[in-house]
Length: 157
Ligand code: COA
Image (cartoon, rainbow, N blue to C red; front, top):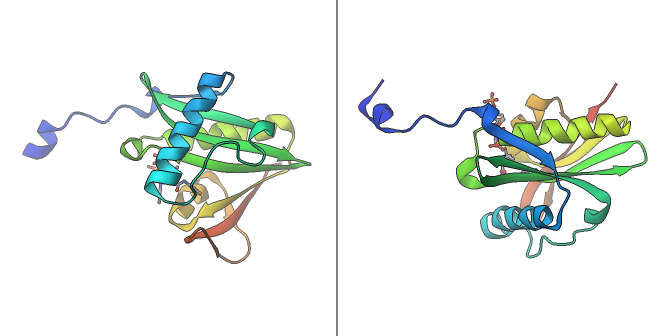
């Protein structure tokens, strides 16, 4: 262990990340706050993140670490397909397992709903993140809001 390691606090254990399905207006406001921080301020992907198409027909999840809400994501059911979108973890809180736990919950909700396939449009920097969860790329890469994307799917048995 180096001197620097000795001075840094241990990272919080992954199991401390809690994920739940949004059920209140306060929850939805937290969803929009995280989306704004990540997709507007950080990535300049869009200017508005509120009332996106399908928001009111989707299941939204939030993740927290201690008292702090740190991540979000949503799944929308269309026929036998579940579409995952707007997955984001606040910058300083990445690498702690929140993204994985958010995705696992959205996948669980998709199974519970009886979906046969889950689809998403991944930013290509995050491909390994989705591949680790079992998604595979389908079709060609495309650019949306100046960010390269890749369509991915996961078949549920
Ligand atoms: N590239 C490669 N691997 C990645 C990765 C990336 N960008 N982000 C996470 N991973 C890996 C981690 O190393 C980890 O692997 P491990 O379990 O073997 O250690 C695994 O994926 C899970 O990582 P986790 O800590 O749960 O991810 P996270 O909380 O950092 O969240 C994102 C991942 C992509 C949600 C987060 O980086 C983010 O919000 N990015 C900005 C918004 C964004 O791009 N959203 C995706 C839109 S498609």
